[in-house]
Length: 100
Length: 100
Image (tube, rainbow over all chains, first blue to last red; front, side):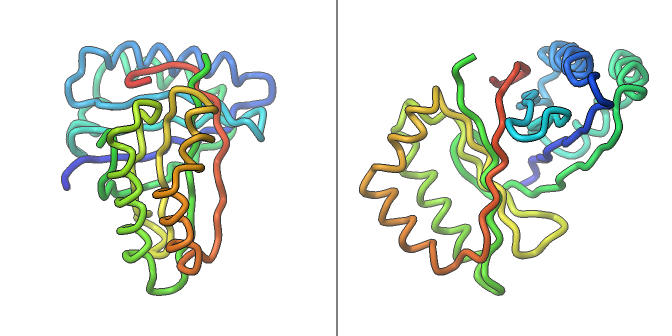
C-alpha cells in the first residue's frame, strides 16, 4: 500500500478559524486538477471552536511532497501562517476500507 | 451541508491491533453495499503502535446511526469490544474540499 494519508490538525488563532478555513478551501480548489490528491476535505471540530482538521489522501508520499512545492500552495501557506496557533499532523498508514 | 464525518480513534489492547484491524476491515467490507457510507478507511498510526484511526464519511447522521443497528455490524462490534483499550471519536463537521 503506497498511498499516503494524514490528518492535518490545526488550531487557529482566536477568532481566525473561519478565515483559515477559507484559505484551506482555496488550497482544496487548487488541488481539483491534481491527480495525485485523492482527498483534501476541510472539517471543523464539533468540540473545539478553534480547531480545523483536514483529511488528506494522496496517491503516494511523493505526490504529497510535490504539492507543497507548488507556487500557489506556497503562497496560501504564507497567507495561512499568521492565522495558525498550532499544527499537529496525525501521521497514518492506510490499511484498507471503503473509499481507499 | 448535511454530510456526517468523524474520525474513529481506537487504542487496541497491547498486541491486539492487527486482530482489531481485521475486524474493522470486515466492517468496511460490509459497508461496500451501503450507499449511505461514502468513506470507511482503516488507518494505523505511524507514531503509536496500538492506535487505529478510521476515517468515516456518511451521507448524513441518520445513515451513520442506522449502520450501527445492522446485525452484522453489531456482531463485529461485540467481537471487537474485548480488543479495545480506548475509544476517542473526533467529532467533526465537514465544510468543503476535494472528495467531499
